[in-house]
Length: 408
Length: 62
Image 1 (cartoon, each protein chain N blue to C red):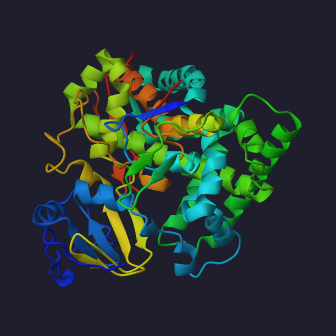
Image 2 (tube, chains in turn orange, blue; image 1 turned 135 degrees about the horizontal axis):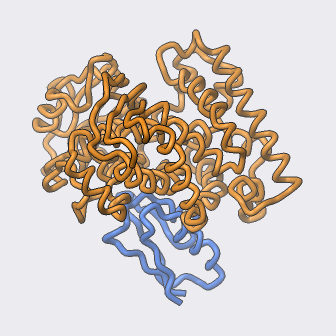
């Protein structure tokens, strides 16, 4: 393959690119520095490789097979070996090519949108039950009173386990989440214990559905078969633990970010309360302007040239989902608007071969919850000081006190 | 069988090419190419491709 610069793309000297300190806790993907860099060009430098800022280039690189998923070597980078590193290596997300395609083929059908319609009434009942707990008071901490139990109990519903066991899902997932942070290595004993606990849980579920098949999600995974190929027992365990871990944090965080977005747009909150059918577009708009996953990472497999920029093998590429989703070059009138039509797709679920496996579930449970919240929490406002994670990487609220008109 | 992909809805994630590689493929520009008249023996995998498509852009018209 020859790497030539076409006349359309003048050669870019990496040294001339703006620099974004993405690892600094005070760095924000919505900062003026990111907007200026996006106006100046499509790419910036970071302490760990490149940041891609415009819609067109994020869209192309997300699906470009010259790049692989970017965090596959995270345990090795942190000097971590053993059961956690082994689990990580087995993740669907960290596989590529034929290995990835095989496992994805076996997992995808369990997440069929057809099978989700039946769960929607349960999501409605769950949202109402949780709101019943705090609506009379006219105040709540949105994270602990709604987002956390909702996200964890949706997973319990999917797995067919008693919903009152949700704190275990939440606690083990939160502990595993420490693996993504700076204290990964120090916390390893706790992280390994949480993983063992999830595995024991998954083990029970698998044994139960093998003995007593039901018309449910776990049975579909256990029975998944394609051209005489099935998942091994270890693959089933790894996948179930990943689905619990991957489904909890992201949904909890995205719900908090939805509330943040609507606090800034009270007219849209009112509109959503009056028009619950806008729940679906509300989710898409929230994920476009305030995605919980603020960047998706990829790693270059080989040296290659992209639109005039030489990218070396091993370079980490941060694809900025919010910056792309609000890029005025592609998105007309990019301000938040749940009535907008014809928007290009956002990147809140990543994209390409690694597109989020659970997106139909997330879309379904959030599009049900948001209109109910809007109807039952009118005149929504901040009820105290919220505690937010840095607006970078995977973000969201740790606590989000809210006040609203009571008794709805 | 006849297969139609609504290209205004297609987002080029390539999940169909994973589900039904005999009918759908992603080209060197990571854009979808597909056989609009696949053999009926491939119905199960085409149905699976339509089902898993994140954009729900695949339609089977017999």
